[in-house]
Image (cartoon, rainbow, N blue to C red; front, side):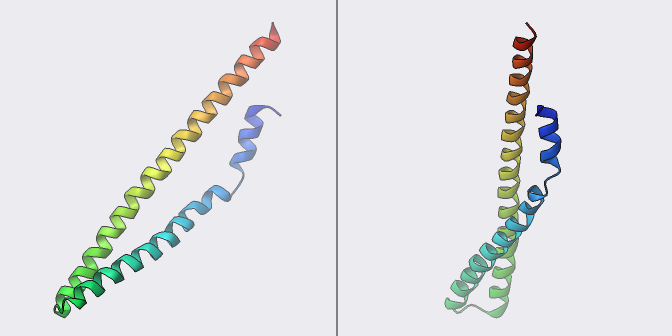
Length: 102
């Protein structure tokens, strides 16, 4: 099967769309545990309700930004790897075609 046909068929698959759902579920779980732990620690220090609430909001914001940056870097790295693999496959296909034509 030609490389272009394989690439077209792979693009029709839907599995690559589910990555955001996995990342969201893992991110929520991680965020809930870390924020709850932070708030319990502050509450254990017998701080006021406003300090506990502020700490929780700050923890949520920091966790969300951290997860977003980590996911972006992860996805970007995966895209770069896949693009490099495609280029290698196309070069190999071109080289094979050249050898077969001689």
